[in-house]
Image 1: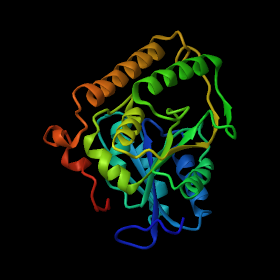
Image 2 (image 1 turned 180 degrees about the vertical axis):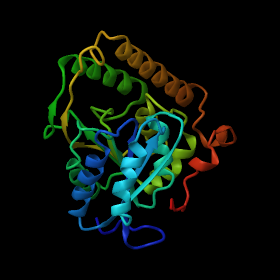
Image 3 (image 1 turned 90 degrees about the vertical axis):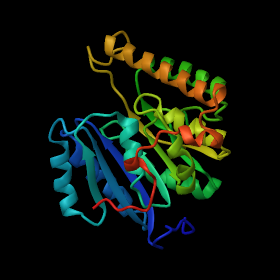
Image 4 (image 1 turned 135 degrees about the vertical axis):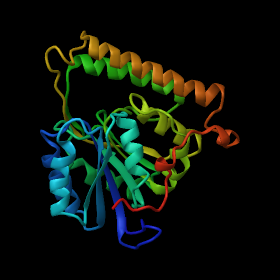
Length: 279
């Protein structure tokens, strides 16, 4: 992967965004685990932790780790919770890498999978590499209810957007910088279906080389919180489907993402994808 160079520096290869919401229990462990993985890739990197709403001690705990590793870890954020999609976009807009991606905070997704995702860029000359539960080499533990819902949702996604992948919902995705320059200014979804919007818009704009890579994932339902019949879970499913339908409407009906509608794109200055530093 030595051909991936940053526009400003020959050293900066990779930017990893970690969106964090009420993550005080595990954010320090997450940051250190991701750093250990990236230390082994033998390339320069940066980790950008985006605190999506300062509602607990996540920012303070993350900053303690960043203070010990200022070369590689940065912490940014804002006071209000604006959604995971917004947090990812906020971090990506400030990233300096030629390969830019994100990984969910938490204990479910093994960050060691990042190394394999990066290798896939070179193997397939890819535009985008996404983690996939359905890759033959993935090691996945998650409830049967979630499997059924995920399978059904992927059928919907394939029918609506013609995406040639089997799983779009794993919280680990990496993009070439040039892809993000094209798609970030067009995006609207802040929360539930932002993954789909990113992939659908990229595919629509001609970035067809989207490939899947294996992941290690251990997902559990917590009684009363994320069971399939809980109100919270059903509400999430509804919002996912609603946002997905909205992306389809903008993409196929009103052609919002087309260059001709550039004047209608809603891109706040602080989300502008540019050569900015964050400290």
